[in-house]
Amino acid sequence: MQLLIEKELNCEDKILKPDFNQKTGRELLAFYLQAKFKQILAYDKRCETPIFKVVNPNFISRFTKRLINNPSRRLLIGITGESASGKSTICREIKNIIEQLSMPVSVLSTDNYFNDISELIKKYGSFDNLTDNGYDVDAPSSFQLDLLKKDLETLANGNCIMAPKYIPNGTGVSVPRAQMVCSDKIVVVEGIATMYEEVKDMFDVKIYIETENDIRRERFIKRAMTERNQDEANTLKHWNYLISAGEKYVIPCREHADFVLDGNSDLKYFDQILEYIHTITNNFQ
Image 1 (spheres, one colour):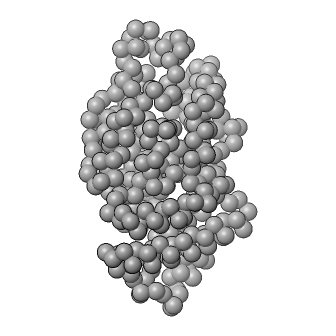
Image 2 (cartoon, rainbow, N blue to C red):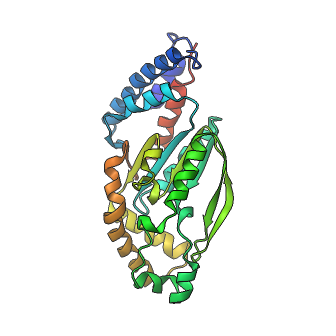
Image 3 (cartoon, rainbow, N blue to C red):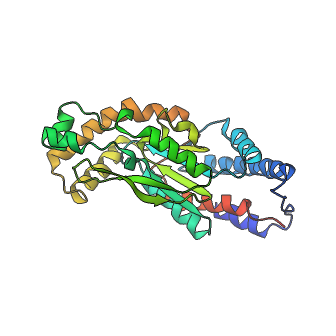
């Protein structure tokens, strides 16, 4: 991929920069991006460990049509996948590389849209007691999806929001309007709720991260026991729940994704893809 970047930068036969304020200019850019994106996919297929596992064949035409017809709308990228699949890591990588390239980007986690269940936890005595009595924490009904959809529309239209903040300390407290999220040119949204039915159509790019269960299990157990100080028995109990919830709620979202990415892929290679996309969209005469 680095060779493609260098070839693009050193190419002397560059197109004139289109006038993106004109529809014809945006149409030219769309045609150009289609050709370049197909080049990325062809390169990835030849790699020993490709990052693209599945690509929606309708994505390129749909995405470029959106750029042509509604250029002022913010670009919303949704990233989902089962727990410990690597979605947060890839989300951070997208943010980091985009910031390095001086492109404005905001990040929003749907985990902050969990319902406030503090009163239920008080009633049952603990979070574990609540879930033991049937509370399904990863179900769509456990999220403030109406608020999430409203906030995504606000961000897409160029306005900042005051998002809630869920406190992950076992109390189940959700603080309303607790954190400002700016409406930058690119808004990256990650979490299991990203592609739930109520909000999935808000995104211009839908990414599903997929990783083998044994890798996810190792990541999850390490994170739970070292970062969250959970004992082994409780960690394994939570893992078993996540397997069941993932099959019920998250895996079905895979069919709506524009891209299914390998969550165990080389992040340096992923960075190079993002850098190449930036290069081809900014390397005009």
